[in-house]
Figure (tube, rainbow, N blue to C red):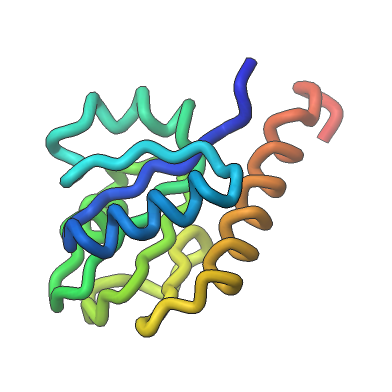
Length: 127
């Protein structure tokens, strides 16, 4: 089985593509989509992409708003750049302001992927 990857949603396309390139260059499997509606059903994406990064420097972050409505269950959401007041400061939402510090983003992504991998490797009934 391949390593879990990161789904990068490019609500701001140039920012999203830059983030996807950064992840790939750092050895993190990444898939870029223009928006979550253009991708396959979110429930199936969550099993392959336990971390979703929304690259959005607009006032409204559509991916985060869908997450708030429960469209991305069991997924860690990293929002890069958005100042959307509707984005909650919840357990599975991580905000990364611009200007982007690549080391900070990569450190966060690696930590989130490691945490999701270790939580999914615990055998049922042993927790």
